[in-house]
Length: 136
Image (cartoon, rainbow, N blue to C red; front, side, top):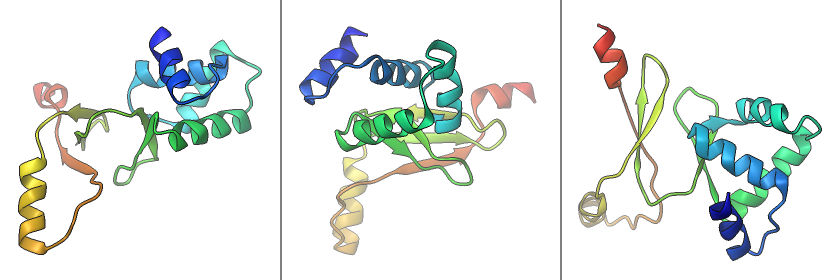
């Protein structure tokens, strides 16, 4: 929790119990959609409204503390902002995993071949996770 208080303070945002609860829940569950997040937070803070959740999510996005994760054919999800990474989406169980690999060489190749200057990327790779493969 102290880590999140420090992050909020560095962004000049107040460390409210709502924001801390949101950050802790997302940190615990990884990639999470707003409905699931709301259900989980209501267990601890039954008086929090959906409007409060949305307002805080928008603030955390605006200050680059959270990041939207847009996955094909899934609800939009949120995660704590991390260093650039690739998302692995299992086509069988819909789990999302992060993999941290160096992408600079790929971006340089794309830029040099196309003349396109990449400012931001979001890479999702679809496949089957280890857990689902082991069930076969």
